[in-house]
Length: 318
Image (tube, rainbow, N blue to C red; front, top):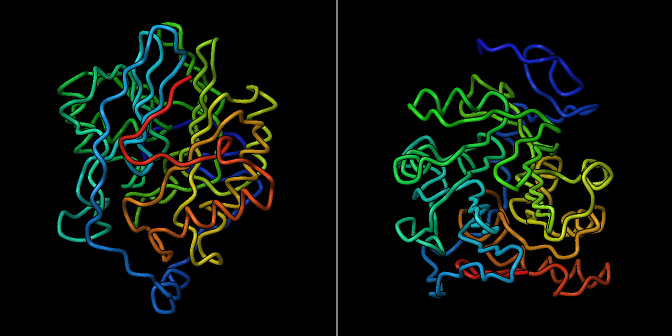
């Protein structure tokens, strides 16, 4: 990594880290998981419903449509945003191996409305999909907001409209503020670049409404920090999948109970689940996250209206 970033509690001059934490799994721990896993097989293909493309009405502050995995179309007045867009068949460096989608995207790429901004939380293949990014750049030439270090990937592909962000840095586009906030995760695209780029979440604040996109994260105190520094979101998009086995996944991926606790910590008015049901990234079954979310809501006395699920292609508006 040739770039030099400012040293901080999350950058030591060579690699990025989670402040006060070090839970990167070793090769032997990965091997243990692969040799002892109790993986529940997913179906090869699950049809999705066809929902009409939801467009923001003049009296609405924001519309959120779940496309797949961690990809949402967020429509604010005068500005359309995509989060972690993934349209490829596999979330992998290879076209012939790696997690393969079992559900088609809820909004086909060719019928997306004009995209103004794309936010990318980190560089894992199920969040930073270069083929999708190149297609979006060719069609819309949006502004790409990425974590420190990930600008190199995009610039190498000839994508010029890129802004790399550190934690708590802010970018304003029209009337919408994008604040890059912490998450608890890690980064790598290969065996040789571990934690050479940052990871994080985004708060999007229009003045009339706040939307929080958690990216990919384990449960930690950063949710309280986000609320303290940026205020409670009106809408939070929170991951609930890729959490089994817990001994291996928990630090970097929330289970549904963790996500409910994050919803509470954030003081979110309403939350939507994501990061499940499209690509099998861990050992749980395809329906387990939804079932476990229901149990967690009951445990913490959170109504389905306050923390619910959408089908791929389904949206809601405020």
